[in-house]
Image (cartoon, rainbow, N blue to C red; front, top):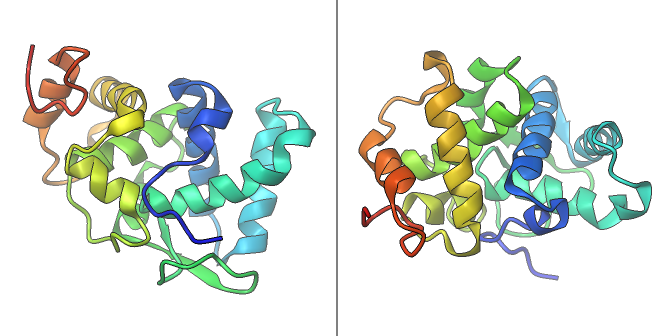
Length: 191
């Protein structure tokens, strides 16, 4: 199966924007603490996070793969190519992932929101063939993720401490999104 670089796959399975941000933040927090970021290590972290979030084990199989690849789509991790993440390959933090290390210790939902909102509010040096969601979010191409991005920007704007706000974040864009009509999910046209 070909790697899909643009679509966050776990969001729909997790049921709501808040739940997705919480799980993404919990996984990101743990990954940022890892010395070696191997696929097996990330899978173990995801299993622990899902267990802690009350997700039934029967849903773990697909959700684990969806989540570790979503970290790539979000631009937090890179394996350096747009193919599937093979078993022994090591990933590394992207510039966004490295930035997020300063936010370690935040509430998981806020950390997840900072990761998603940072894609929307600042252009990162990420491979568009691997971190396509992050690139498309910055371009305002939110599609099915408008609710997730809007909620992430809302939490980011209201709860992120100053040291977690990336240099060059577009606050006009954030305000446009937060005050836009439902018919304008990209935030490019205000209500």
